[in-house]
Amino acid sequence: MITHRYVHFHASDPSEVTSCMADMAEKADGGAWLNIEAHLDEVQQAVLVDRSGMAGLFTGRGSDRPLATWVPADLSGRKPEPPSLGIQHGTGPKLLGRLADQGLALPQSWVKQQDSGKRGLVLAVPVRIAHDEVVAFATTAIALLLPKHDFGMWFVADIASTTN
Image (cartoon, rainbow, N blue to C red; front, side, top):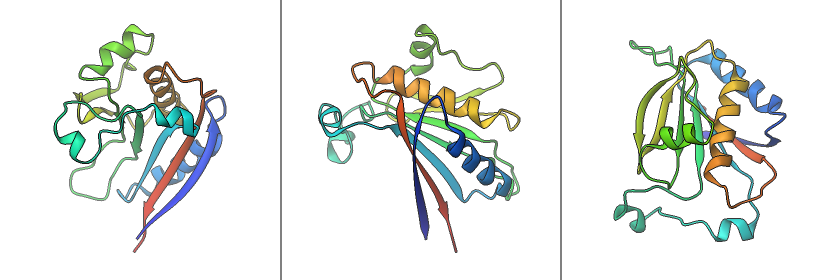
């Protein structure tokens, strides 16, 4: 069973979200993840293109509504996995270069694992990186990917975990 907890937060104060991230990271069992997206009203959502379902099969791009997903390290298996941050988006390939052009460079110790227009950007994040840095990167990237929308830097986090 998957449980969800939703947290609305402003980019300037992600403390409730980072506290949840710390709890998830402490378990390090691969059974939790965190999704972050911009908190948009109905009018703002209506202008975004949804490429899920059949429409998504025939395009090389993801949804126009960016979604960041953080997964804590998984130390439970034979091969430990580092924390990762993924960003789904509809802007095409080579997102890292476009973010860097807008002032959001890949942090020095992070590693690009994938940068695809359809599957998104996936970064390996060193365990030592503070959770607020991860949230700051994710929320800044989302804001840069939604330049036409004035959403006041408000976000919603979906904190999900599996239970047996």
